[in-house]
Amino acid sequence: MSSHDLNQSGKKKITDYFTEFAERWVPDSYVIALVLSVVAFGLAAIFTPNNPYQIVQAWGKGFWTLLEFSMQMSLIVITGYALATTPLCKNLIAGVCNKPSTAPQFYVWAVIISSIGYYLNWGFGLVFAALITKELARQAAKKGILVDYRCLCGASWTAFYIWHMGLSGSAPLLVATANHFMVKEIGIIPITQTIFHPYTLILLGISVLAIVILFWKVLLPTDAGKIKTFADLRPDLAIDEKVEVVQNKKITTPSEWFTYTPWFSYIIGIMFLVYLYYHFVELGKSLDINVLNFIFLMLIIFLYKKPADLIKAIKASTSASWGVILQFPFYAGIFGIMKYTGLVDTLSQWVISFSTEFTFPAIAAVLTAGIGYFIPSGGSKWVIEAPFLIPAGQALGVPDAKTIIAYMFGGDLVALIQPFFAVPFMAVAGLEFKDFVGYSFAAFIVLGIIMVLGLTFIPFAL
Image (tube, one colour):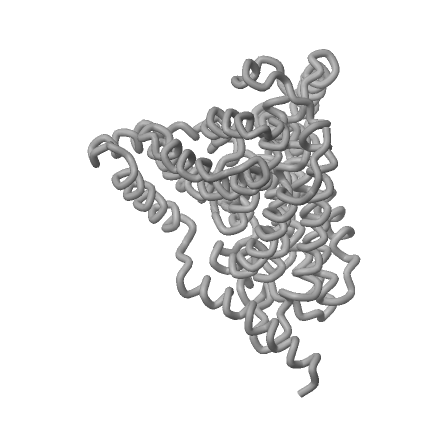
């Protein structure tokens, strides 16, 4: 056996180990939510003065706090899926995904295209990346190229690491907004000092390069006998999805005229356009998840034209949102335990107590990653952590922007091994978290090392 074969064998065994471990030990994403609920309960019982009855009260108090977010995410999945299955979008996605000509190129292409989607907007990116992944798998099959769909999903999902450093990062956008909740303590910090700061951009660039190399050279499957294609795992989804449209119908009643002609869709679509002009031009506001859903709705109204076609597309895509609806209340309950029992403060103060100015950014990032496993949210978690992270950083002489950047990277890192944000991605891609977390876990280790070293040694100069 050549040295090259030995190296490839070693790589295969490493990735096989992670994948087989995940398949054996990582349960369904809903079960993970239940397990984390029990773990959070146990931690609160051990490290806070609350009794079990009080912990349950905190759990119930938080249980419904993510209802608005759940609806937003459900609409992201439903409208994004409906948009991507229009003939126009399907042709565009097929054209983009037709470029690779080798198996490594397919994995790298999944990283690059998904990264663009996540950087532009995390909500859009979740659906976009999953649809890109499915189409890449179909294109590989058409070309007779053996591509492991689990690894392909792992490549697309690992790219989610960059979302908080992108244009929709919750914490940096929040602190750049007038009258945010910490404005008295830190003032207004523009995104030039966070998202577009060289400290962020350098570490972001190194991280993306590392992800590309991982799925180009290190993590890609080499044993053809163990590769599972899209058709192997999901034969029901591997075929080209045909967009079913309502055939030309002879209109005989007024109700059929409303349903099978596009005129009211055009009128409502124009109303959408006018409001977007008002939002972006007159008010000068930016894109957020509500506006993104607004745009998705507008686009599918215009592209499907007839209400009957739109209704059929929405019915077909609604089933993809079941995971969001079922799981998000349980994560809100975990949020309640962490916040209302004081557990988050207890754990945080313990870790911060041994920080220095030099080590604080990396420790803060690791801390927020740990908290993020139980409260997987970029925005609401910042509301919990900012009141102690910012003063701790200030006491150590760490610039506020640097503390926020550390929070951004730490919160993103844990998403690679936590299925909360992956629920919409899984729903569209058609796999369970355990199917591809072996790959994202390997990337988690590498990116975690890069994050700690980068936050510690990359110079920060305002």
